[in-house]
Length: 442
Ligand code: ATP
Image 1 (spheres, rainbow, N blue to C red):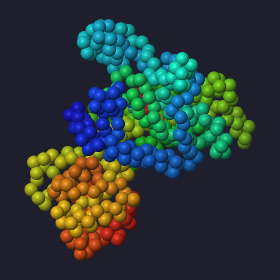
Image 2 (image 1 turned 135 degrees about the vertical axis):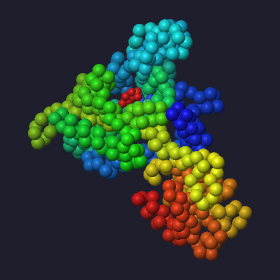
Image 3 (image 1 turned 45 degrees about the vertical axis):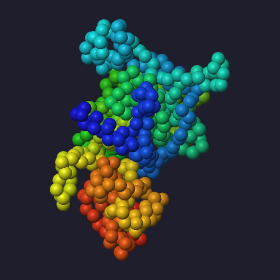
Image 4 (image 1 turned 60 degrees about the vertical axis):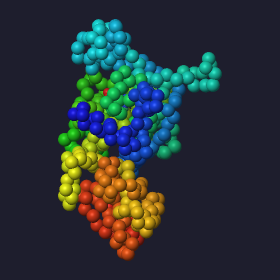
């Protein structure tokens, strides 16, 4: 299966989805850059999540908090203490460090040296804020986006006139000094999270925990992840994050095994009560009807944009030995088909002139491209045989290939080829935008 992963990584680089950060300098710190197609797909994932949270749910608002926050936030949240530290062992000869829970043998996997006893190592990245280094204050790049939501609890509640229960959704970068980054973009030091925090009465926490678990599973399934490739893993008390009263991992069956893509946590009153204590501001909620004053419990759904990107990519990747075409002799090549959900595919429509040595056909194809460009993420391609161009588009998951041929010049129409069925139909150019919009939305 490692082989499958290297094929996916190779496609991702070759076709402009993902590049190694600072690649010309040999890469940097397990960080990655999203290329021209990668950024489209990543934006599509974030849009699908945002719409799911904000449009499909009531009592939900959004936030975009700063990455840099007062270091007091991280004292209150418990991230600066042992709570956000991994247990590590260090090799006494090569000094490499490994996560204690990943080491199955008592020797260094790199050099066979003796390992130290496990000790805690903080994952937060420190930075200095202020122009003069000596006077600058130390803070940290956020290790999770949700703290920005908790410290704004009162602002959001008052400005939006909300009542418990309600939720706040946020997408943004997070940073962790991971000890063992790896598996491509699965575990990196800079990544993006899509987090939703649901504030509710403590008595309703269990009900909402179950509700959000179901909702989140449905989201992945609706975007094309097969049921059998998703599972729930309850996290036992001793393995839970320091803030969680109940926790589960949603796991995806990656080519390298079952791994977490999203965490669902009942954070209880951990965050609001600690921020009250540290800031001196009473963050309890007052219920006008019952006259009760209490710290709401928080149910969190915390997904990774990068991990779900890799899950969607792995799920969509297919190889067809000899190719799919039945009309011509099968080629010896292996064809790649990226069967991404319509909402996630980076390119929706490709416009292809049948041949490139007929100026009238090329001109018409370019006109169609200009017509569609404001409406869809669209690409124009005239290089190579038409079959080869279809395959290039299948490989990056383009939903429809539009071909302008000789008939197009007389009839003002073109063929629309469906990525999955390869069926072609003729559509009049004047109807194209409407027809494609309908097709893409269904
Ligand atoms: P793990 O056990 O894999 O380190 P975690 O339990 O620490 O993950 P959470 O703190 O629950 O992860 O973070 C929520 C989500 O953020 C994860 O499910 C994952 O999708 C994403 N995430 C966390 N750490 C990373 C990372 N280093 N690289 C990419 N995504 C990450």
